[in-house]
Image (tube, rainbow, N blue to C red; front, side, top):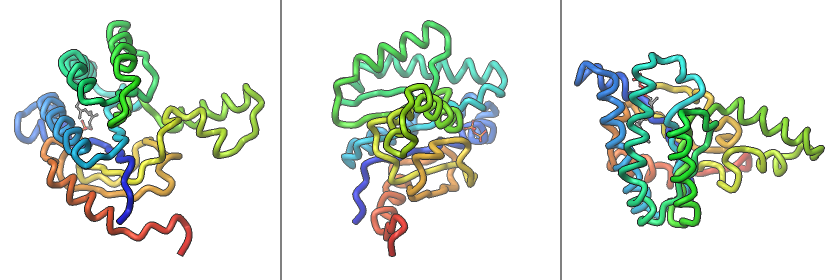
Amino acid sequence: MNPLNHVAIIMDGNGRWGLKYKNSRNAGHKAGLNTVEKIIKETLKKKIKFLTLYAFSTENWKRPKKEINYLFNLLENFLLNRIEELNKQNIKLKIIGVKSFSSKLNNLLRKSEKKTSKNKRLQINLALNYGSKFEIINAFKNLNKNKEKISEKNLNKYLLTRNTPDPDLLIRTGDTKRLSNFLLWQLAYSEIFFEKKLWPEFNEKDYSKIINKFKKIKRNFGNI
Ligand code: FPP
């Protein structure tokens, strides 16, 4: 049985679900947040130490302003309502991505990170305004600036996921098979599961099924 320390998820399909069932993409994002809550609960139950969720990419800025505003309002309310509870559950929240939002949201993100920084049970990396190519280029720039040798170990120090083991498992919902500029370096040896269901209809059972399949895979890491 493979150990499972880190699950990364591309939560795709909110927009399509919302249009199909509620005639509104934003309703899909709202429903998607319920799935986030379910998956966090199940991750705790399974004693997994790291969960990285792709919530907003550097490319998502191309979306209509109305949808972007809705997403950030949802996030703001989620943090305002749930951060105490997350903290009580010994969950550490870490934002990966560039915090260049409204000063109100930037502050709330910083405050939420600080409040939960000592927690040990589960680390949730929330990828917000995250782009993997930017992250890698930025890491190389730092190596160059500090005149450090280019090595995997040194590069890892400057990635936004520093101090986090690479994901063992990547799940992408929404019946789409691509990585969308997510953790391109860190996913080098991850097992990848593409799930047909849209994110709002994905549930604990689907998550557990994937994890059970993952546990039985023979992981070779280049060996035989
Ligand atoms: C991708 O679906 C999803 C997003 C860009 C946003 C993810 C946000 C949530 C799950 C809810 C908010 C989460 C938090 C933590 C506050 P899509 O809109 O690209 O779907 P589509 O492919 O059907 O258009």
